[in-house]
Image 1: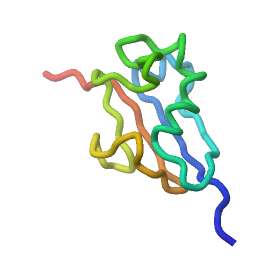
Image 2 (image 1 turned 90 degrees about the vertical axis):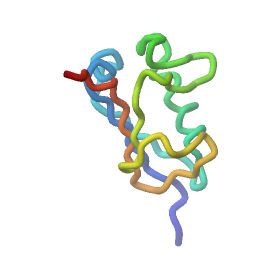
Image 3 (image 1 turned 135 degrees about the horizontal axis):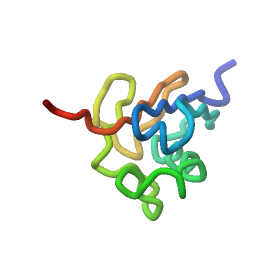
Length: 98
């Protein structure tokens, strides 16, 4: 029997974590769910908490001012990308250069 759902963890670092109020959120989504489906599930947790600099409530997506890493692959996938069971998405503010 195959999985009827996929387990996805979204981890927040730095200022993003401070604003969201937690270090991680876990989601159970239907098998075949996409990154876009995950964003829809995230929206109620982020709307009104994460500032407009990082989250766009209208489009339900992260702004270009934060980095989103998916299973160690950075910014190389879109809303239609299917999610795999056990994936971790990491959202973090740009690191300060020096």
